[in-house]
Image (cartoon, rainbow, N blue to C red; front, side, top):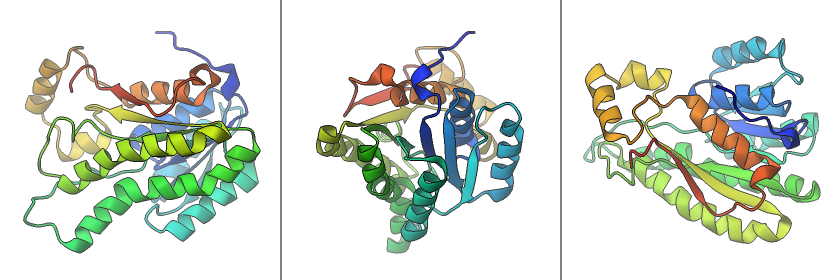
Length: 254
């Protein structure tokens, strides 16, 4: 298949959280292939450096990796500022980092709840806080938050995750209203059942995958690249009229 190229992304500075594996790694790869200047953070240092090494040879601009934990807000915001200092003003922010850990209702403690919110929702707001002056100074930008269809489908077994992801809907729409006057767009990508290496290792079975595809309108297994290509569109000038919206990429599962 032939997929779109976006001239407006060439040279644009893109920051991605959780870029070392899964959907995040696909985001890094796709933006680098468009000629963007990509900076990303992750806690997985070995996988992240291997990704940079793999992409560096063919990319116009080699991705820049910084090890950072998105739950440590001061350190995380410092990493965002460092990427901006090294690559130029960040005009695309992609809030990808998350963990869909399973847990029972009874096992959740206040500390575990706070950890779920910190990993899946809180950092998305504070990353926005760290980039808005860079974006506004550059004339505008695109912020992409990440939701999930899990709460829309009333999936149990991970209430901390689904609650956090549901909150992203409100965060996205509120920020779009606040930042629109600065020409900053805020949209949310809502992935469906994207089977990453982590999913395959921990939860996916032939039976669950068969049932998932049967429930989708489109009868193929969604790949991380499906999400990355939607992110390219939302980051590019082609989507300049889009803000405060959810873009569901789930093959019709929800």
